[in-house]
Image 1: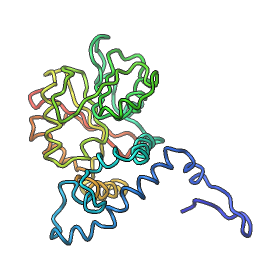
Image 2: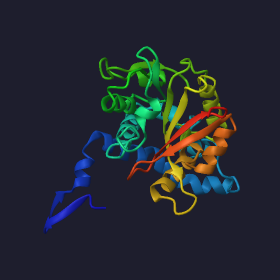
Image 3: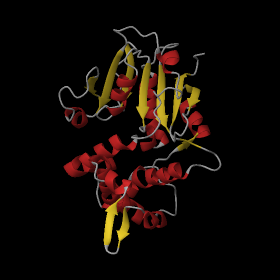
Image 4: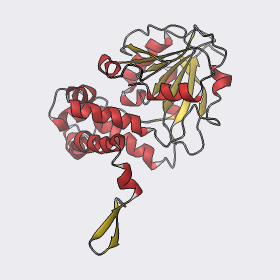
Length: 288
């Protein structure tokens, strides 16, 4: 695993990996893996035997493996240590990876420009504590328009005063009607892969109702699984999502079917060099 290296008999030294694990963001990723995910992996075979190997479409694997009535997000929120570990893991997940707002990934100015200062540029739906939106604000400071972060109350409350300058931090449940109407973009990063198709449709429907025809779009920052020769990092995450939430990573066909079922369509898919995740741009089915 290259966590340590032997430099002399009975003498060892750290490696770049072990040094990285001293960073709280990556350290907490290990905590989350061992305490939340591995129990679900370990009991997944027994669960599948008991259910005649029907593909899970809910969080019952997690409930079964942890002997709880709580779903994964409620379970994490109920334990301060695990809640912090999850927050830090999500913050560290994208570090060192190409991001959609980087030059050469998605044509940001071309696709999102022209918004007035009093209009809403981006609503980050389910954006946790705003790491993605803060990075966008830092990398694209000249684009005008408001930046709004939305997530559950406990996550918004954990943001320190002054921690997210230039961003309006608000409480919102994405299963309920979207209160911000007509924004240029509604952005979701690793949100829909947490949910089955039925629940993903409910989330998308709330966003669809807020779109301004010919103006608004939904930006989905997630994996698009290749039909053949899929990246092992994506397929391993697909297994994790099945065990934790009864959900999955999706192929392009699956994305198109999901979006089409609620009156939306894909207007483009972008993927930067060296990136695992893609940016899927979505508009109303009648938009050109």
